Length: 108
Image 1 (spheres, rainbow, N blue to C red):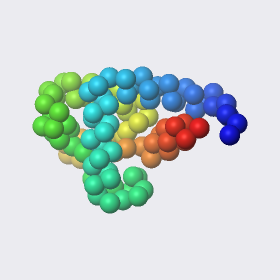
Image 2 (image 1 turned 180 degrees about the vertical axis):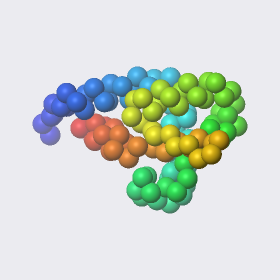
Image 3 (image 1 turned 180 degrees about the horizontal axis):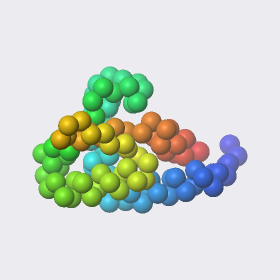
Image 4 (image 1 turned 30 degrees about the vertical axis):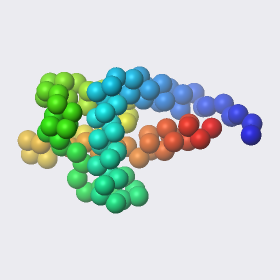
């Protein structure tokens, strides 16, 4: 199979995603978000009714609120997740387009 070049815009997106995921805590947070989305049985990650709450990360990964906020911000800036505020709580959702971009990259 012939190797295809990655378009420049996709290369920039992928580089930002890989930088964000190079930190072990961010990688684990992203993994928790993906597991949460898959556990709800939705094939389309955009249709998951409720994302992972910040408190879920603190409990599951044993890291503090300021650290979670920092890592979640990095993941959001890289386009891997989106954060929604509902009252005082914040929820994280996987960005399906970025997940598809990552999957496509690894299929090459």
